Length: 118
Ligand SMILES: [Zn+2]
Image 1 (cartoon, protein in one colour):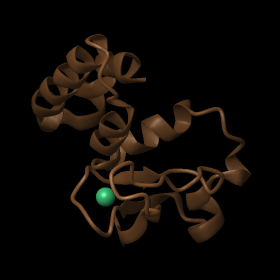
Image 2 (tube, rainbow, N blue to C red):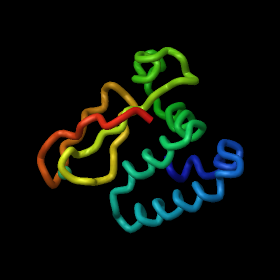
Image 3 (cartoon, protein in one colour):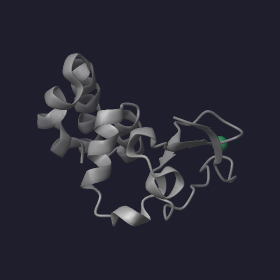
Image 4 (cartoon, rainbow, N blue to C red):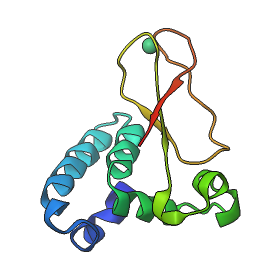
């Protein structure tokens, strides 16, 4: 997904594209060294409305089963819930789909909790 979105960043993000492209490139580098970057890539894409929608469109989830549309209906006001460990400050996880299982913190063994909507 990270590689797939790169050519589309200028049209999706306009003046923000250079910054996001640089962050994404850094994550792709980390990923190619074997680090787990999927959550970070999703977090980066989720932070901006156009890329978030692009990422969502890429997922092969039937539209009616997508979390945002079930919850709100209005595609202009979709919300992705951010989850984080209540005991430490590991990077947040974003729930794009109601069928995604909420992760458990690998350090503390407690489930992530919803923090806010973005
Ligand atoms: Zn933790």
